[in-house]
Length: 98
Image (tube, rainbow, N blue to C red; front, side):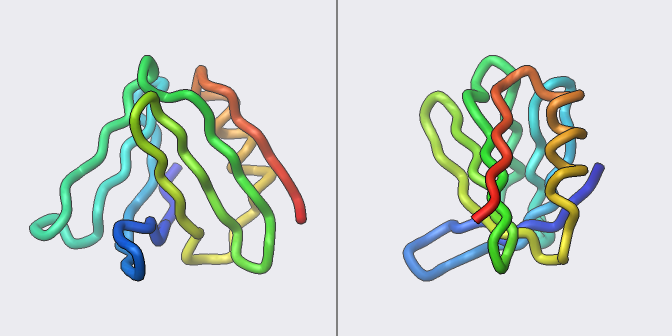
């Protein structure tokens, strides 16, 4: 599973990341490897993932100490992503439609 995300990295700044699975956790790899770090969210740090279907599908990833918020860069089937996350991630996964 690989999905393109635009993650909020500043007040008016977003960065393109690739979302993939990492042994029960999540890996966020930036498209520009030199400018931004790879983010590994381990299963023990992951609290909750919320997928929200709006005009632009959104994701919110809560860890013990950080919150990542972003939008999918392509039109995606959030229900399929939800099912895939539920299979691979031990943390709570929520799907919402607005």
